[in-house]
Image (cartoon, rainbow, N blue to C red):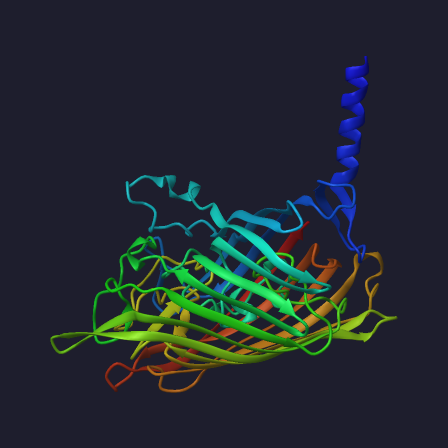
Length: 458
């Protein structure tokens, strides 16, 4: 009887410890405290982003060999589980498991190496597996060292975004500069240090990039335009420095910088970041193979603060300049959760131009801006409030005749903050074709897509 009673009491105390209200009382944590004060703990989170999308396809698009001028698709943009915790005063661990871009054609044909339809079942993987050791802490200031598979890097806050707190329907993916080329969905095997010293936040690291041959696609052929090299691989060096003018930001997890605080903090930051790698790309010139260093840097400002604390209104904004030097002529098309599988109108010198793709990455420069305004709390009664937003990506890439503009407008329905929200978004992008000038692309049309996202996060 005593043993049974002990088990009941232990189970009850564990259940009470696992659900702990957060400071702002907008969500509950699935958490198990390892000590009485709760400073040592293990925590689990879950996020799911389901997309329902109508897309005006690029000319010539096919879906499993059928021509399609437009598509409607249903997919999972992201499904993630995080397990992390503070084991001692100095030891912290973080893991994340999940999948991305899962729709009916998302795995076709990269993983179908055996000619069977089983590729749809291999999408989930470990995004992060990292451990940290804190060498010093004084108040809000700290210095930590860590290593493992991680998204911690330089360049910008959007190179390591907190996906559950995104202001727009999606992050500006161009800022995840080597995504699925020499990394694993923006993660690399790295050793790093990060910390907060007064008003300064920093992260510096060395990453060991993955070889381009292991990304699941056939590497692009060596040609006159730079592509990621298959020889002379070197480590990446990266750093991001942020000056917090007002409040400091949340630094619990490695990387993962917040998209919007919904007015819960008064944040105004100035940042500068860089990623550099020797001989990252190569190209062919006559009979010679030439290597180029990759140097990517950015400067930006980020603001997120309340406008009227009583009403709960808030503003969030970001403006950044990115200098993106991958090497001469580098240009890469990408389409988020692309609903198409092929095209009958290929463009010389690039691949993957079907569906919703556009030249997202390239050697040149990018200006990116976004802004959103959270309306008053309780605008929709017990069903929450709204937060409209807009974003613009303006790129000047070497191989594009004119500057490229991609804009997005939408509205977030914050049913329960970011823990339960719906987002309706419209994106408009340019369509390109071969120019009369060799190795150059010119605009000749535009296409759009409507997306409804339902996000659940805890």
